[in-house]
Length: 112
Length: 113
Image (cartoon, chains in turn red, purple):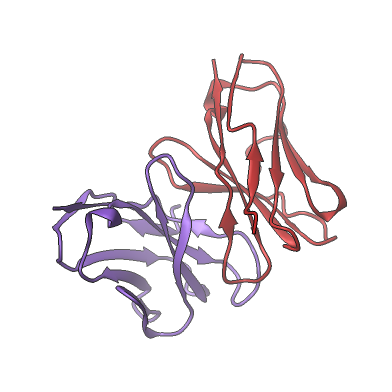
């Protein structure tokens, strides 16, 4: 079956611009996660959606970051007024249970 | 503070040898541990998860968990060049429930032919 998909695969933007990153989880997965991975760094948790519950936003680094999940499926991560330090690979994962999170291919964001 | 620690490597082993990857963690409440493999430029893929003290084997991979000493390891037997990747250790913050994983920075493994 189809895995987690993300778009765009690459995004180059100018400092100060807003960007939207999209994640389409595996069908039926109730949990969706956003992480980011900077060069030489581990995966950093950003936000977690579980069903219809309020999202866990504890990992968002600043109020420039926000995310929503519409209809319990597709999620969009928005970064406003991008900064160069936002450059990273943004990874989305989904799961149906506690054991396994399946990752998408990621969006490589470069802020010039 | 960093909650999951891994040696960044690179760890270099010859083909056919056993590769031993180690991870320590600071939160004694951690219940679930995961090993992910990440090839360069690719996304992480789950290799194994372990909840209980002791060993868990899956093919050439064995995960070992010692909660008293707060470490978890991954052994790869008969290492192959295709095993060359970065191995990420992660823990779940809440025992047995869903939630974000906390990852180490990963250990880069290189298996030489």
